[in-house]
Length: 157
Ligand SMILES: [Zn+2]
Image: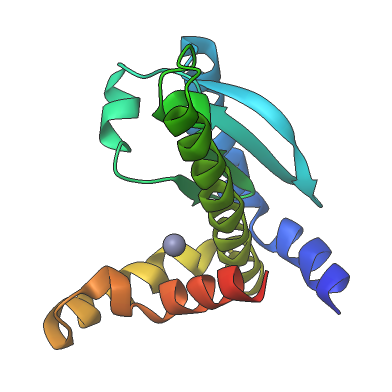
């Protein structure tokens, strides 16, 4: 069933994916802000954030990773801490960051699963719910049902 949803979802959100590739992924790749990592699951490309100083890196500096149609961009340990540091605390910190990055990937893959169901309506639905949560909740992001579902996916592993 999950495989079927992935294939169905790939085609369901293909118009949004094409726009994402043309106007988001390819320009960021050409600018050197992101680098291809691997195909994570059917049709889902994962990228790492490479630039530390671009407008794009500054825009997302508070996030570990983010999802776009069939694309996930992740920060890396070397992006978060100084890659040349080799002491106990930086090694310890690097391990903690790797654990957090694994959880983030599961989180973003869950957003992909949600997008497979919602297709090109994923962002409009997400946005409408977000506006409603802004009215009824103290923290619209934390209490958003899509985010709660993605955090549960992190815990399930
Ligand atoms: Zn999320």
